[in-house]
Image 1 (cartoon, rainbow, N blue to C red):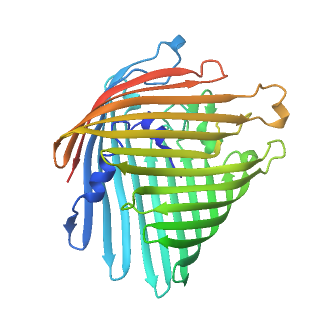
Image 2 (image 1 turned 90 degrees about the horizontal axis):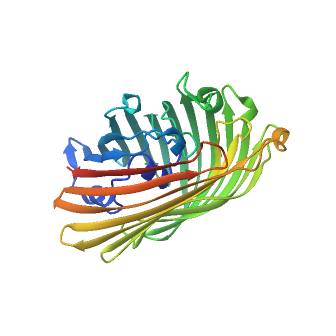
Image 3 (image 1 turned 135 degrees about the horizontal axis):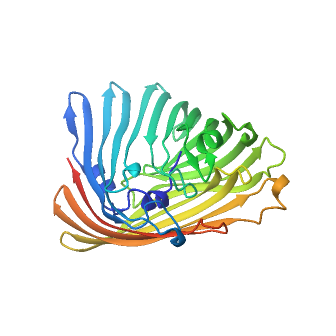
Length: 400
């Protein structure tokens, strides 16, 4: 499951400019332990003040607190003959001085094993997430949840530049028992299993550019609320650029046919996609992240919404070890009513916005210090669902 960059900027990683960690880790020499290559980093982020810890409206007197996050992380790579094992481990240690209920330890683990056999490549992977991060733009409480995923695939090199494959993925999402938001149980509303089966094709247009086409079928089955169950089919086309290319990242745009099994919930047929691109133009790095897809709501009367969000960031090298960063993010949440309550509920659209910037100083070849300030806010048609806040703090990143 992709987490939008705007969400990361709002709720946990705003202190890392677009040009720092990703570039440094990619170019860093590995730490070798036997046949294993490690690429460790250690980051201190958000070392400062959060002016609205609980995302409360002005009428409820928002609470502020001193906070910081320590994040040890490492990517790993292991070669076993022609086979390859890659993965990553990251821990977010989140501290709040006054409001201890907001402290957490968030674990992110993933691994992928690839085995080439002649013209065929077999792959199997897994990921695990244990976190109290907010799950999206809608839910304001930091609720404990677990996400466990398994995936596998087979890809065949059909022609010199063309690859055809199949893949499958199964993800289990579980919220902590007893966690409530606005009186609703998140476990009852959102515990679910997502199953994906897909057929895809890749074409290597150039050594740095690959084209992709994929057709997939999704099933989402809810543990305690089967009235939310849905089936989906989608077709998507995309392009991927290598990290050594002038334009880096990937872009995927497609069409989704989202069909709830409950007859009183309207379906969605339309555009979905994910774009994550960046480029370096001399001393300037520009990044763009965009997402559009269906997301589930905790609210049974409005069980899902169409989320569209975009984030643009610009990092500019000023002189010597000094750089500046600016960022702007917007999100729109268009809620869908059940037909049985359509006449009782007015149409609802929530809007989230964020903008900010930072000043960075490279204290040494592997160390960067930054100072950041970011505004965030939400506007809603619902009473007491609006908020404004400010995060001001510093960061320190060290690449081993």
